[in-house]
Image (cartoon, rainbow, N blue to C red; front, side, top):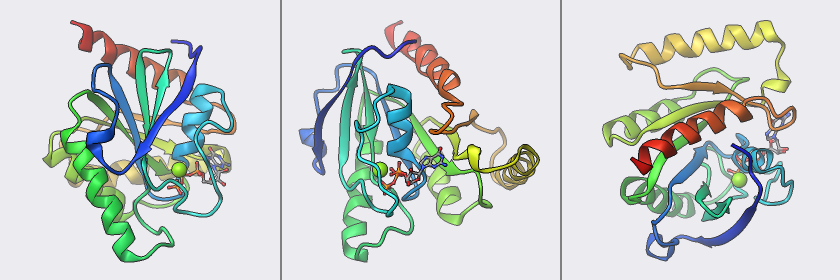
Length: 200
Ligand code: GTP
Ligand code: MG
């Protein structure tokens, strides 16, 4: 897969105002500041496409981008430690979860996890929620450029052990860095293979 065009379409908090669900869609979610918007920009090779920030809580709406005129990428607000009021956060959580549960053309959700830190309760609980609601997801470990390969191996092994306490089978896991571009091809393979099924 090669991305030849990537355009912002619409931002909103009302799932009824999302674009018509006529083409495959892939969403990016994870704790605030984990690197969702940066990863979308890396995949599209467009630095300013999705707004990024070093301050958590930058993305506050459901943002649709159209890729190659044939698929949607969706940048979602982060959960976790955003510096916003609890009320505000509950509002995003509500519309984001509603979106994930009801969007008919959503083929995969990419759950971004910070590779540098140990498994967080909010991530584990969120993935369990996805499992309970039968929403297919792939785990993307982010910011691996910030770790030595031995530290990365150690962290991945620890994460795997944590997941195996709950999951009989582990989801697909991909290591990524928006700085080096690592992980891009593997993500594209997931997207391509899933799209093929959508067309069948
Ligand atoms: P919210 O929209 O606030 O939920 O955040 P987000 O998950 O979209 O994160 P964003 O892409 O805005 O990135 C947060 C910070 O992490 C920024 O300062 C990025 O430059 C940095 N960052 C993101 N990805 C990487 C990466 O792969 N490597 C490194 N070193 N830094 C990264
Ligand atoms: Mg963001």
